[in-house]
Amino acid sequence: MKVSSSDLARHRRAGDPLPPLRARVEATRDDLELRGALGVMAERFNGAREEALAEPGMADLKARGIAIRAHGVTDLRANLQRFEESLRALGVHVHHARTGADAAATIGDIAVAANAHRVVKSKSMATEEIHLNDHLESRGVEVIETDLGEWIVQQAHERPSHIIAPAVHKTRPQVTKLFSGLAGHELEDRREELCAYAQTRLRDAFLTADLGVSGANFGCADTGTLVLVTNEGNGRLTTSWPRVHVALMPVDKVIAHFDDLATMVPLLVRHATGQKLTSYVTMIHGPRRAGELDGPEELHVVLLDGGRTALLGTQFEEMLRCIRCGACLNVCPVYATIGGHAYGGVYPGPMGAVLTPLLSSGREGSELPGATSLCGACSEVCPVGIPLHDLLVELRAVPGSAERSRRRTVFFALWSRAWAVPAVYRWSTRLANLARRHPRLTRRLPVARAWCDGRALPDPVSATFHAWWRSERSTG
Image 1 (tube, rainbow, N blue to C red):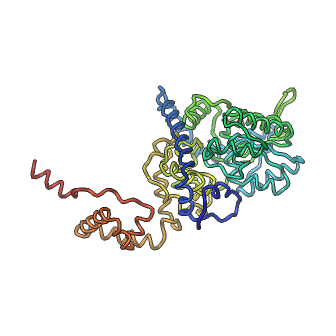
Image 2: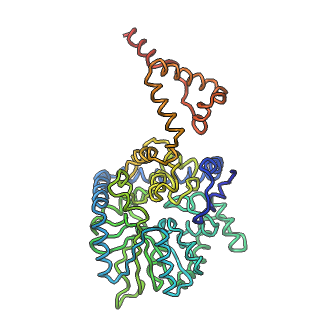
Image 3: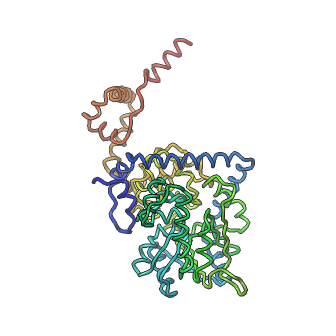
């Protein structure tokens, strides 16, 4: 199946069949504009993060963050109950959604009850996970993304390709062309003019919206406070101007104490963008009270499970620590080569290669754990100590995964037995070195051809370890 990178970018509707992983990779691997945009993004984010993490005290901050998130996962159910009690005490309407479809339906019902015709949205990957835009539009509600990157991909009828930089796959000339088409006249290829055009278009949306939808970076169990970490003012306009505000929060975002924000917010921001503090940290503490000038009359919080609590007590529960900083994407050599759309799901990169099969109970993304280098860079950079490369290895061994096909299992079992025999091991390594020196040979041997399809053999060595060892002993 032949597809292009633009085809993958536009593939967003729930239920549409995805092209095979190999076709997705081939579509993005040779897109030079995409590779260039990803390289610029990685250089900027990684450089800023490394500079931020070089500051004194960052090791202690990370250690505290790991402890907070570890305890948060262990006490997740108790924290959720306490969080709900705190929210209700503030006059917040609390809804529980077992699945993404339940969450979308709940928010759709709230929009209909509020007689909402126009919805403005702050950036939220959770709303992408539940395909909220498609659901609301199917019920006759206009949805407008207000984060600049999200608005760009919405106007292009595409999906986000990065969890914190949704339009990273777009170059400035591409955005200029897109905006010029929307404006009906040529715009200058300058950031200032492009941003000004988007601001003009979005300002009216805020003023006329009936309902605002946001995500939440954290929810504080002891106070019922919702926390949004953003770099644009759209988050505050979305949550304060419309009469009704709905916050969709995955259950793993809850933390025990408001005081924990002093650790978690700086940790998130430094690993996401390298900033000491983001432009806007918005704390929402219930709906508007008497005498207050802004804020919604109604505040609804939809708590999304979506397969998360099923991970508690399993070998994969550490994934629930994730704070969606995107650092693992920025250091991943696979993501840097193929981009986010090739992953097929909402969450790309190493965290997506773990989350997608887990949250779908293996129905989606079973091939993603195999599309990783296992270099360990993601685990090293993770601010909350998630052993991503270990989880990827464990997912490869899950029955029913793409890595556990009967053929593959038999092949590796036979390989293991063969390499237990020294003579066979020596013969096979000589054959591998010969194949590396003569690539045509790999196309003649079925096993070698299957193995090398998508892999590069290492450079041949001049001598085996045993030969080197004998030489060292004789000279010693």
